[in-house]
Image (cartoon, rainbow, N blue to C red; front, side, top):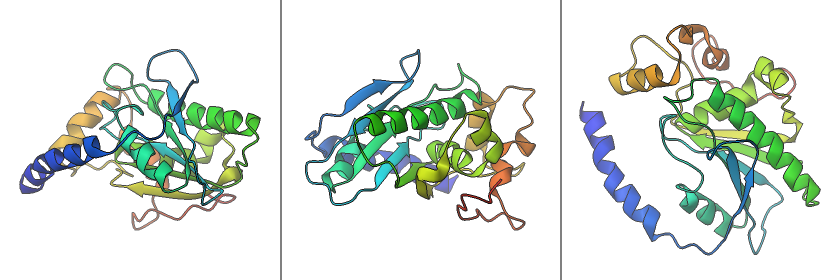
Length: 215
């Protein structure tokens, strides 16, 4: 309960910092399917310091958030000289898993095509995300069955950065996550043996991304 209260109270300071970030860069909005949430925002920096592209999936407990809401992330990353793609997806509880995962994979494929058509080098992509975004992005990177199902080519991906993501679902997890899960999954979905478990090693430690060997 103490951790929950600390987390809740920290939001006020975070939101204040979010709204203090300027809007120097105007992102390009690209839709990849029907629905208001199925789009990504692309940020192009004035002075590029790297040929790496950041593909970012927002958090929000699977039931909240959007690329537009997290514009401050794109502004900050773009200001550092990196190309930045912020992916959206359909939200729970209206849309049940794996709709969110399907959208992230389609956003990634669409972003690759969009950038390639612009003549942009897409050979060095870093996939990243916090919380629910880390969960969804990690499955796309690590699970071969998912990549095959949605035709995701990870040869472009050179790294994955996940922060605060639930990489497995356990019976002893906190109340907040259990409530969010109940919104995300259908009642008949076997979440204990779903894709998140495939991200874990024998000791439940997330394994590093190995493009050609990982399941």
